[in-house]
Image (cartoon, rainbow, N blue to C red; front, top):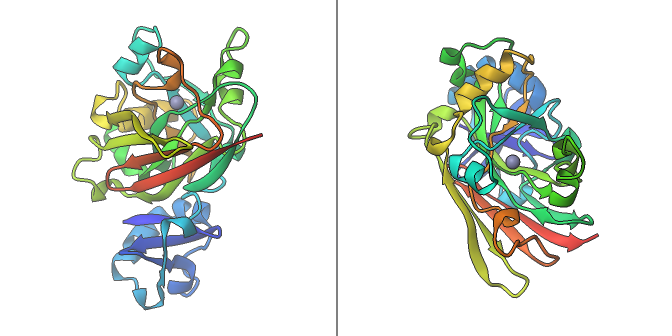
Length: 284
Ligand code: ZN
């Protein structure tokens, strides 16, 4: 099952059409995505027999972020060994967690202003929490994930590295720095939700294309279900919370020479089975 939002209303998406769940259920289910995720078992039980006669044609440009206003956004640093190596760190023995402040979340198609400094790309698989909970056992952690979506953990590196301790959360939370989408896809819709491939392509202002990152979630140090279980031992996970699960090697900050996003460039990020998001960058 594929779900998302159109103008902030919760929709299911299938074969190029979107179904407004509140309308199609005659108000039995909510229009707000956080409310819908808090009643995720009901949504899942209703969906197979839903009447799609009122569905409307939809393109990725119509869709907003699958969760426009999450209450908590967790993000994981150094969750792929080659990225830990390129960043000069030994792999951690517990997840390294920071937050992206929720106002940075954006939709699948967006224009992002480049603040002063060096703005870098980090393609990431983003887990969307369903009804949530506290101390979720590892064996039930996948069941707590409503869906996976594609995201970018855009990062301004000068601010990120400033000070001791460094300012990860602030420097990764500029407006539009957390684009996600185009939809979230339930784990059961993947051949293997623990092995999902992704890539990002940078399109230059002149049209040149370069694949800048490729990866597969099978290479995570701490897989999605492990992250859900571990985070929930400390924080109560709320419906619609997001977990940015880390990026693989290939970020611009670790290239030689270093390479950052420039005005006029477009970053296309794709997650198998989910779709693509597309960000164009402009000067501030
Ligand atoms: Zn990241």
